[in-house]
Amino acid sequence: MENVSQAHGRFARVVAEVRDDPALRAYGAVLALIHVLTAWWLFDNRLYLLLPTTDPVCWPLVPGCDALRVLSPRMLRVVVVGYGSLGALATVLFLCRRTAGVAFVLLAGLVALEISILALDFRLRRNQHYMALATMLTFLALPNRRDTVRVLIVLFYVWAGMLKLDYEWLSGAGLYKPIWLFTGRGIVVACIYVVVLELVIVWGLLTHRRGWFWAAFAQVLVFHVFSWNVVGYFYPVLMFGLLTIFPLCQWVPPPAGSTASPTLLRDLVRGRAAVSVYVAATALSVLQLIPHLYPGDIALTGEGRLYALNMFDAKMRCDAFAELRNRDGSTSRESLLLSTEPRTRCDPIMVRAAALMLCARRDRGELDFVDLDMVLSTRRFTDPVMHTLIDLHDVCANPPRYDPFFHNDWIMAVSRASH
Image (cartoon, rainbow, N blue to C red):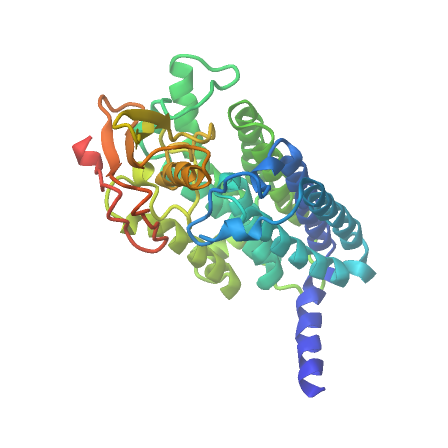
């Protein structure tokens, strides 16, 4: 009983920070509402990816995801509707001080449910989920939420800006679609401005000077408005939600006894911010550095990017195919490009999965061939020639394992210097 009492006391202290701060309760409501948005996004022609009858593309960290895909189409719709409905309920509960504790627990459950759904297929991968889940986990797990969450979100932009320090982006060649109102050299100017925004201007979101803050905040909002035409509705709408913590902290003063810093940017630079701020900042930054531990051009190989932001940095061109060796001695080709999603279309994880799908169809008697060879050639948009990234023989007999932690030697470590 004593252990239960101690656990209850710790939980009460965790919840108290949110319950007693109107700004954090409002932000909790916004985070819960993001789950409603995510449920809508899943309904937007993506539920079929989770059906048992659809060949899966498993995450390397969940290699047996096919065994988890057991829900019928009807039950899958029920689960996603329930997920969105619980998000709406948590939104309402966060707005009332007395029910904030229940909403807090419900938000934790929603995070677990979202991770469980996304884990069923790699094709559901989006930066939006990465940033939203990182923000929610920080909100749930770390104290000093006003400061910790704001610094975390600023670092999302900073690390995205670091990825854009690349000719592909700075020249405008990395864009998948045109930007509203910009053409020709204006595209280059806009792309350079985005890097300045993400690396420099965004720090104004942490300043105590209202003029500087609102100038920075307005520019970030405009950036997301213009991103709509390039990436669709999901990313800008979700980011509008995550960004609400900044005006809330401007408009709503912290409650008595709050440890929130009135001069967060200054304290952050001088090492005087809360410990939780540096914990979150360090954790996120370490994850962004992991891809650089792998050999080759990580924009091509994709290795290590499971743990990091997968923002715009280069536009890929690729050709992926399986050379099928038929029983009569002839050969035929099948495309291994499963997705139209530009950031994962050429990823070796996707190409490998497409090849293994063909092997599975052969084993089910749907196709008739002896074995297949898998080939992936790829390049950055501005590179003049394609480079062979994968060239594997007898894939069905010897399926390659994707190691999520170490370099996969069946992926050739093509370097930028060799381009």
